[in-house]
Length: 398
Image (cartoon, rainbow, N blue to C red; front, side):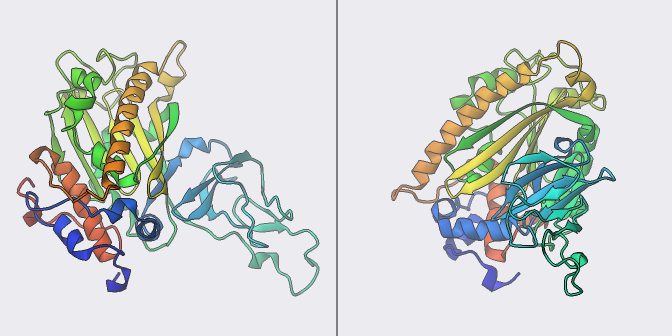
């Protein structure tokens, strides 16, 4: 990283966003409205970081394949014959046709390009190249394997790093490992999914997620089951921001009536039965860990003002497969809350796009938002996201 990697933005305004809490300002307008800066983010924040590509159990059987976009690039996830998940660039080595269309899934014992029929084994090695001069000494199939992408499987989620130069994954998650371990998400299964598309910049989804200052204004259902002024934000190692909120008296989970139809997760006891942990792992995964289920938001930035948000609700396999189980108590509640949030942040996007926008300040209850904005501002200035902890002098709340 160096000065030539600095984002095309108002550097003085970025320095002000990284000033100590109480003196700082929000990010400058171009961070939310500039297509040029969005392109820079996809290169420096997404392609050079550990990006969540979904759940490993979405590729359940050898031969399962899924294509998706990460930043500007396309990747292909494949479960191979040894039951391991591999990641490749979604590019045929012949004429660069995509092996699968973006967001397309397939199941086959091989990977076949639909353009000219070049066919690869599930480990990425080239097996068949029709009419390519395969008998010629000048053509060697071993010279044309699919190009691999760096991959890690953590607690049931798939992460990829396209540039191959992100920090070690253990440093990226840091103390999030110990915070998440009791919930055993690797043992959970998707019980319900829904994707949304919001007309907003991806960072506004983060900023909204990291505060409940807005909750009394737009989330009456949420405020009935968790006091909006409860809990605290956490200051631990890793490239994430997060905190804890408490359940209201009489509530056992987040639902319309505070009750659920699933038991507490096996590893959740004591005070964790009265808490919900909210974590945003940079750049694109939110973990909302309830006593009885986990909800996730996975962000896919589509443009500077458009974001796809994939939500999953996870329970133990035995719960999901039990006769009569319904995920609706969690899904219906959060579907309402999610939609309330999308309306709010789409309004913020329009406001930031106004010529009347000037970077504002943050209230004391928005220290989680500050921590996210600080990481973004330093990322713009330094050329990429970092696992470095926030210095103690940055915020009097730390």
